Image (cartoon, rainbow, N blue to C red; front, side):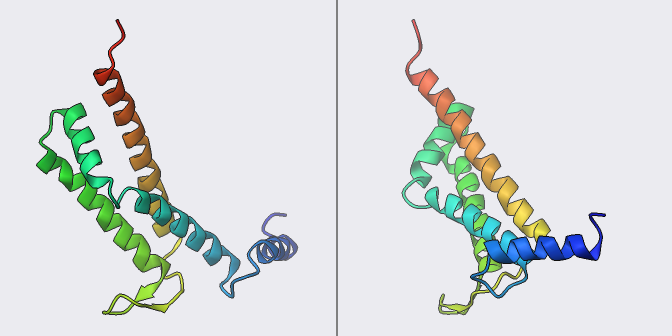
Length: 136
């Protein structure tokens, strides 16, 4: 019954009501939204946080801050990938087209890595706080 034309029509109708502001098919709008929100999350850790993240990783793993920089570099790379999925940018950095160019698998990967990164930072922050303020 879920694969019936009527069920498909109802699903499309629901999605079109929720995401009526876009001309994309409903399923594309959902994945574009996932990528956009994941990209916003990654952006929080790009500006002014790199130094803190490097120091925190170095302190909690006994790794050099220089080597911990590879983690922040990978976040920059993922942000760039998500941006390219989110919209097409020309050589001057201006948005040419605001269309979603990826698929479900792209959105899923960006989401999983973003949330895993946040979880990693959360755990490292807890470890760093415990290390700096040991209970007597």
